[in-house]
Image (cartoon, rainbow, N blue to C red; front, side, top):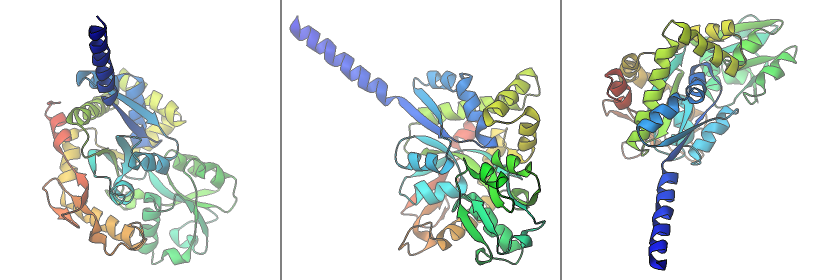
Length: 345
């Protein structure tokens, strides 16, 4: 009898460990194109798809964007929302093999440069500019300056958390900031604020993805893709449920429904999985990633001693690679977007 109890105990212990191994964690932070993750989790859509594949998925809001990526890179999360550039410069450069599972959108005005006491990018000369340094905000600023015959030597950068940037701008009578929505909308509404540049001037370059560990199980990838595209269908439905979903996302983002709809207009959302897949396969993505890796390497984001921007390999859906083919750490994979498009998840 004692032997039987011992065996039963071991079986339960093993089953418990197996169950624990089946729980996965996803991080997201506030941004118009990522608010659907909070909605999908709260409304049970993520649970529905997790149940379909016999796993558990926990979706966690991390208020500090860069910290969410750092936590993903350190192994605290299996997947995380981030931009194409940050996926390259943080996890990929850090040695974490990462896949762009879902191309959610590209910023088409959702990132902007706002200033007081100025009307154009040229008015930024010799000004202090608050931004999340070495993020896509930094990338967009560099592009804006370059397009206007200027460089970073013409301005002074102040590293500021995305959680604090709006209040810092509002309280400073001569401030300039680079940020994304929802903080962008808050700073644009401040007295004397002027939008002098936004991401619609570099369309398709700031891409918002769900990044996932490349070796994550197939069932997790399928469940996340399924939950995302079900949510996209709801958002784009144009019915009562669609309006309710937008209302809840607006509340979650700290915005009114009108404000959130305004933010959605400057977000080139890929509601259609087939269009997201098509974008991933386009030649423009290769050009963008070459631009991004050059910017990143030139600013030391590959780390001290990195010999060349080819250090990290970036693989595209056609299996072509930018950089070192023996050290691929960032992958654009359309497998699960295509499965969603064909109704095969």
